[in-house]
Length: 499
Image 1 (spheres, rainbow, N blue to C red):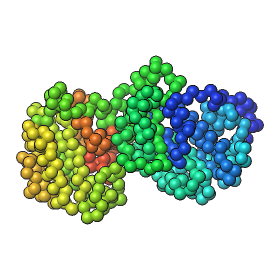
Image 2: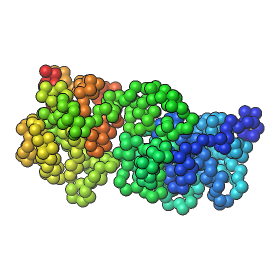
Image 3: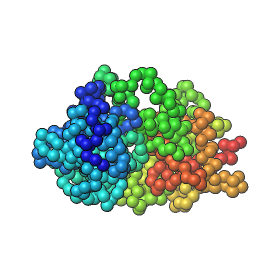
Image 4: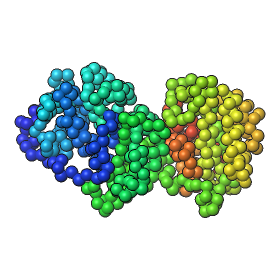
């Protein structure tokens, strides 16, 4: 590619940063001094422009000894199109236009060379999913990094960049991304550990300033203890000041409520999969609370309570259940051990279902899990004291757990192994997926609005992925265990449901 000052296509800048309309949120982003800064959320909200402007601002204000920077993305071609060739890139706006040249595949790789008051600055381009390429870049002393579409990055790359940023005094890291996989290190290792505006301002103050808060569907993932140098801003369509109310209305009506595109692209909420069998049917209307159960939506009041336990088959695996609560030592581990009990209930005729509780005992010793399950059953019986406790279904692969439940759990009428398949009825997992979808589509499936249900059950349902054979993909993590526990209920009670 020719150096940019030689091309006629670069004669006039399409934009000028002096014409940018700032909101209260974008003003705070531009003034933010956190070492690790993340902008994430929906598409078309201005986060790309702000993140690029923030990067350029830091580069042009840097000292004479700071001169090496990295721009990481899916591949070099994409980075070129987005940042070098596009007239919409802030690099092609005033006052940055004319103060840099682009050189392709020289001196160790593609790079933008800036001319600043404190000398030349080198911005190296690197693909974050090519280990051989990005390890050459990471071998240098880096003063700042910008990661584009970070949720798509190689996790090892992000971990290395974060560790380097933390241990190097003057280095900074800026990331931007749309919604993605909630299990990715971008979320579990960075976003969930970051501060948000809610840590510094009340909701009332944010409302008075016209600042859009972080959605609850995102806040539920954040850890209670955050790192001081981490800051994350969730960006929505309302954060782009160029959109009129009419235009925003068009965006919100573009995709069906509850669809992948609505949640992932319009709302910018993580976890929604294009091929999820359940995400299109679960939204805020699916949740209900106890007052509604008792006083308004009587058809969902628990009449016949059912418990389902899936054994922790990953106790000694390397899979992590991020955000779970474990006890270190003899009775728990931070690696695996996803023993789960979910509690659901039907009405008298088995026409409506409500998910009441999602609970992870997570004890390494079997009897300890059984004891905690027994206590949880007792607690649920006290809350819903008029409901019959008809069944508890247990993972049939764990005979020890089943025996422990049968000998120790006192508040359930019938404890039995779950059914995984019924050849007489041609009943398999694909059929059960369809049954659950029917309950959801017809408004006969509700979720009690609790922190645990929103975090674990809801997260598993919207993140579920259906494979070509019709089954739910088993990723060896807690989502698969949640699905198995729900499947046991509908599989084992299928004959009752179809009559």
